[in-house]
Amino acid sequence: MKKRGIALLLSLIMTSSMIGCGSEAETKTPATGGVTAPTEVSELTLPLCDEKETITVWMPNDVTAMAKNGGDYNNNPYYQELEARTNVHVDWQVPAAQTESEQFNLLFTSGNLPDVMYYSQSGNIVYKDGLDAAVDDGYFLDLTDLLPVYAPHYLAALENASENVQKAAVTDEGRYVQIYSILQTSQPSFFGYVVRQDWLDECGLETPETYEDWENMLRTFKEKYNASAPLSTVPTWLWNLGYGMGVYNITDFYQEDGKVKQALLDEPEKVREFLTLMNKWYEEGLIDPDFASETNFWGNSVLVSNNNTGVTCTMYTIPSAAFLPSMQDENASFSAIKNPVVNKGDTLKAGYVVPDTNASFVISADCKNPELVLKWIDYLYTEEGALFANYGKEGETFNMNAEGKPEFTDVISNNQDGLSYDEAMRLYTNVPAWPGVYYDWERELQFVSEDDFQMCYVWDDFDHEATYYPSYASLNLEETAEYSDIFSDLSTYIEENLLSFVTGSKSLDEFDDFIATVKSMNLERVVELKQSALDRFNN
Image (cartoon, rainbow, N blue to C red):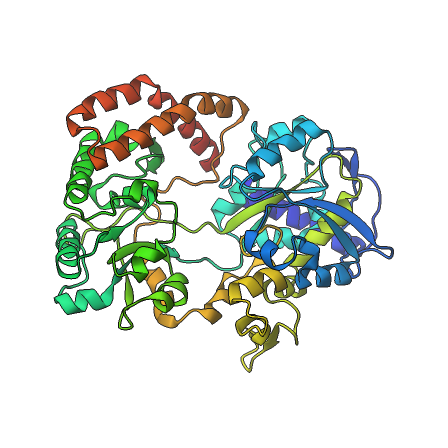
């Protein structure tokens, strides 16, 4: 349906509103789960119900919030205020941290689904056969007829989102099943590599651009500062260094002009060249010797604080908030740098494209009162509800400044109980990246210096469309099963061998055999499946 589909849904809202907003005339089209869809928009007024109602919500374990709220989201002042406003009490179902994917799958064997469930491709918290199958199998509710009536503010936010988000909001069968968190404004890439700027200055080095520049910089850091890990990274970040050589998403997929590609199949010689360089850097001690087992995606703070690394991967909120306070060197400073290219002036054709949406909610087909659930969610897409979700309670956690913009109070920015701003936000506002909210990511800029925020524009300087494979392009039921059968083992094989080539535990003389094996494991077929998903998404 894409944009046209959303426009049609919104036209239903407008037409219904002219008929008489607030009435709920029966029945138009039966919705999945036996729910009937009224012909007119249901007016959203607070409280949502006269008598307190309880809904069950399955959510991941936010470790930071749980450590501060006694293990119960209902102890969060934000959810206490949300309950006071809506008169809806939430019975939270929260699995142990790091077990979410497994526990989500077990919900479908329990025979007792909660009313609302968190759903996320990135966290592998998904129904294994896809959203349409979840509806057909009687687990999830088809919201197509209900959203215009009970969640018009969500649809209005969706209308203002990017075309990719609008495509993602509709399943292959043309259904609306998920309710996404949607960014109010587009966000630049918020993570990448940073360099010790004070070291660059002391060594008389310019900001590195090419692979040759990077190698010279890392070698200088090792020799001058005795850095044990001149480049501190994790495997995913190391593979990203291949972008400048034309090695895109080496463990995954990319597209060019609508054609899905895989670097090992389409550019094996470029991959060989890249791995040869990374092996050289590793053998010379320019890369952290333990990078293959490193798990801290945002930078090894121990290596940073001990002056053992000069380049690391992180996000823009971390250098000033976490790195600098722990540094032994009080003169330390960090600057963002782009991924290297072969020749000065080359354009990078890959990087991190921030999606305009995050995780989503799905509603159980067994939900007794989906109308109330949708109103409860839709409130956070209204002007009042979105302000509350992003900034908390006016006069308590924020006030309006002279320009009419919300500013956090000391409850968030200088908490007397010793909470960091991140901890306070997770208790007094909607948890960042959680679904069911019209999300204002710019709120976090109140805690970030202008210099740190400018890092994002360094990392965001690449061609966003050249190789980007949209994460929203989903496989259908049959494709998902075949993809899993092939790629689960194949992806492990690829990752293990790439690491072995870099560390030298496997000679690059064996690279041709590796490529032959990858082909024999049916990587070409996986590309075909990804192509089918992309074609549907684009069409």
